[in-house]
Image (cartoon, rainbow, N blue to C red):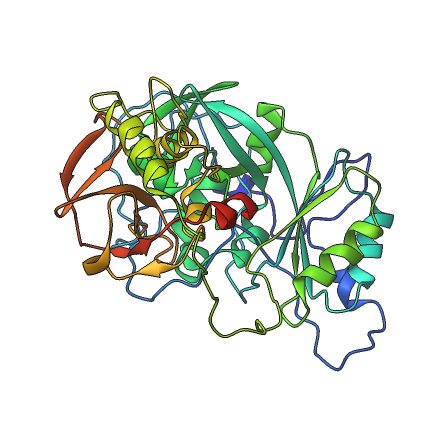
Length: 423
């Protein structure tokens, strides 16, 4: 199709029933504010932590599909490598044009992720925008879909605006967002690498095959996939039910309460990159009895070792298949210890100890995600004598192996009381 048929750059129209513009910067720029901070224009979102400049993003731009839309061809680089010319089945692309992706202008750190049972209305957005400290808003569509046979929490976004809310290197990658705009799905590094969704592979989706166009961890915890708004419509995602809020100078806990008070009952808000006052105590005191007893540790280790040879399945919680954090949660549950579900939550279930002082039953954590180096992406149970027990990745099984020190983030000694409070 002729490139001249591409839609012009500009605010993307949302559901006609709501009349909400995608670019919500007009909400925070048009009102009088009581603080002295200059309002920041609103742009984009894929969500995050700050990335180092030398991280290589694993992305490859999509090639033309026969009879499909010709996507922009970025220059050759480590972040974008043009695919060889070849005939492929047509990518799922619900529209007859691909909107150009607006260049990145400024990053916004997300602080709250708000979900509603119904689409956000213009009036509700105006209320949120008027809360003191709010600098930028971004709408998205959120739902759980089946991708390659896995239940995956997914966001449908406008690539041009959503990209500003993602890690620096992710946000700056034009090929990544061009791929998403052209109909690809970007998945988290853990889902892609450990879950077996290799780059450029086509996987089964709710409305036909989807191409894995990039690895990009959003930083929103359970969110593991991002698609364009157009693709989201073909997948049946509810519209405008997710809102990302940037308020970098405001206490996130107080902001959360104020925003929820302005929305109908049933809305939920999760803190992301929370801005909180410094703790009163510099060092937490862990009195006797804070940690697992010998009997509990033995029970957890026996439970875990009984699953040696069972296959890794992304998202599995047992009793026959597991992912890394699912194995930890299940094994500790057999000892009566309530553990949170995912790795970055398990990371804060107790104090950190040096590897040289690790005891059997302590948890080992790694930061292996090149798209988000601060993200905790893998966990194992320390077995003792320099060995660990873990569920590695798709195609592998639960096993005991020597401790891998590469990208090791630290060792945590689990406190059942602390673990039960993690949400």
